[in-house]
Image 1 (tube, rainbow over the protein chains, first blue to last red):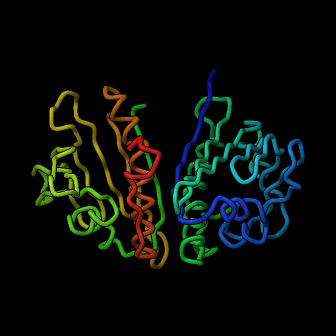
Image 2: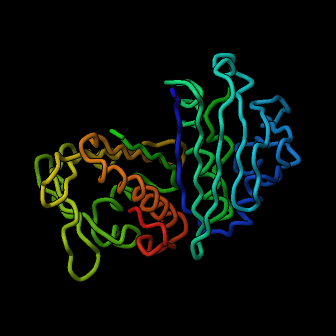
Length: 152
Length: 149
């Protein structure tokens, strides 16, 4: 089956619970996700949305699977760029694996089409978000908001 | 898999990132291995184990060296049983005090075992590099339970 995917692994000095909170709680998300946050009640089957600082919806979908603080699967579609929205829903899998003082975070973001523009876009975004997250958890300071890519 | 790409953003000057890759005493702190070369195009380089043995794990040739911005080298096991793959480090200023490091490991078509090994290894090495430069702390990455590296 045709598909495109992006995989990223990061090792972060933190705990599984702290990482889980950083990825699911808006007050943490806003700090390292360049002012964006997510809205959901984090139950399987519930709606999920990624919001810009001004309240516009960037991405939306639903929670497919949730097993705190180890695993999260989201159905995820871009909502603000028509050429990405038309590619339809992707699937984003987060896995958190503790190992001593560090947690191995794996993101696998996949869509069922070849050479997807959506995957190209997230391949640019995830390293910035996850570098910012790692800096925040390890040093207390995320990457500055101005260091995100321009959002149109 | 023919190519593996890893991008990370690090609060550090480009020269420090360059030194972390090319200077043995620096590399041993986060890679637990180190690289030896005079870093001139055409010169040989060796990737050695950081323990007392200093065993050569990987070797190759320096293809391009433009300190502190870009380093390209071939990458093969010492037994030369497979065609060499290639590693490119690109260090770009991204924002004041913040660099973007991209590691591109390509020409892996003929060596699936190497492709699998480096896909596990680079995230460990580059996560540890970011931690070292931003916090001064590191982990012994090859002792963790995920041993693909």
